[in-house]
Length: 243
View 1: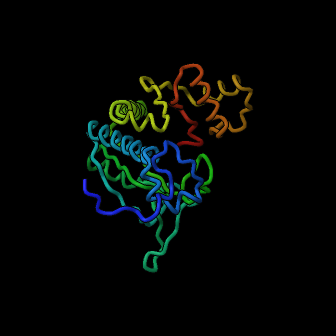
View 2 (view 1 turned 135 degrees about the vertical axis):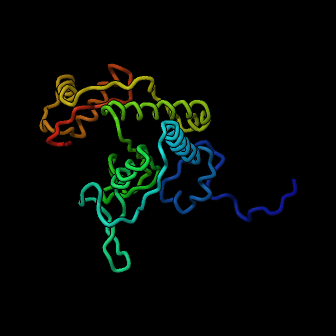
View 3 (view 1 turned 135 degrees about the horizontal axis):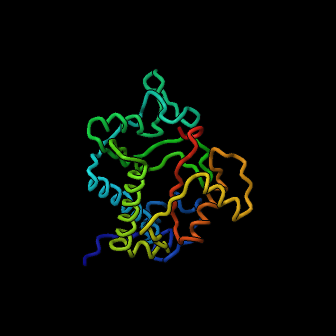
């Protein structure tokens, strides 16, 4: 090897350590260097695996990949959490969802999907919200019931977990990820799920038409304890809330 140059100063962060133990204020200004740490960059490999699994599974199920606009004329899922922007003197928004475009393209290809960013003007410093995230969307026509959609989602989860185990094992190990068992995803009706959570954990049902965050957590806990499953399908939402 011929050394062409050497740094004049030591590396500012210990990138060769397993965990660097940096606070955010220290890491962000040094992010290009910090990301060379094997554990830090493993996050991006896991993201790659999930996106790759989604694309592979959708293509295998006869879906066509589409790319929809992210500067739009109107909101797709209500106007309370939409980013407004000035589009050369006209009002426009950042897309919350590709929903309208997906529905249009079902009439063309029958099955479509997109892997792309979406934007939500929400308080993002919570465990439930993000201003910007990568959304995995698919839409399909000519189905028999919502169980066809559940089968597609289950197939994706199974493919994603298998891919993580087989081709991304080192990154999974570096991050200490426990890959969940998705061989079978249990299913329960909305009203039954609320009843089980209330009886098992002494939770009072306050809203009969929707799931509160606490109920979602308790339902997940119940199926983890009883079935060892990290996932559960809740079906038959009341049409008053989810028409």
